[in-house]
Length: 82
Image 1 (cartoon, helix red, strand yellow):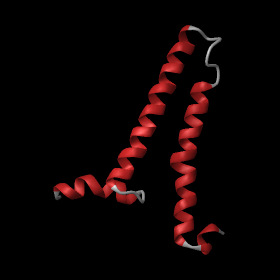
Image 2 (cartoon, one colour; image 1 turned 90 degrees about the vertical axis):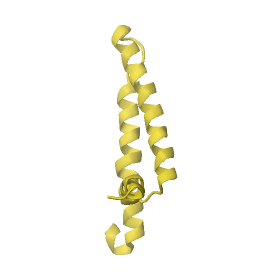
Image 3 (spheres, one colour; image 1 turned 180 degrees about the vertical axis):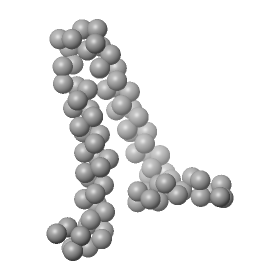
Image 4 (cartoon, rainbow, N blue to C red; image 1 turned 120 degrees about the horizontal axis):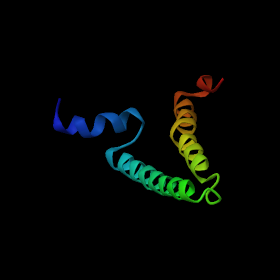
């Protein structure tokens, strides 16, 4: 497997270039770190950040799975949406 392929195969499989994938992955990691910190604080002080962790997971899922499926269906054409 070529070195270039190691860096481009997965991003291409989700319809992104390497740099686009880098940006999206960094965005996800930042949100996950903040969500994790909120969950940790919630563990110590349960009256704070009551819904923050679950909202973070829900929003990330929406971006990663639901939105990607919609974009892939649009690219596949009108028959894929039905």
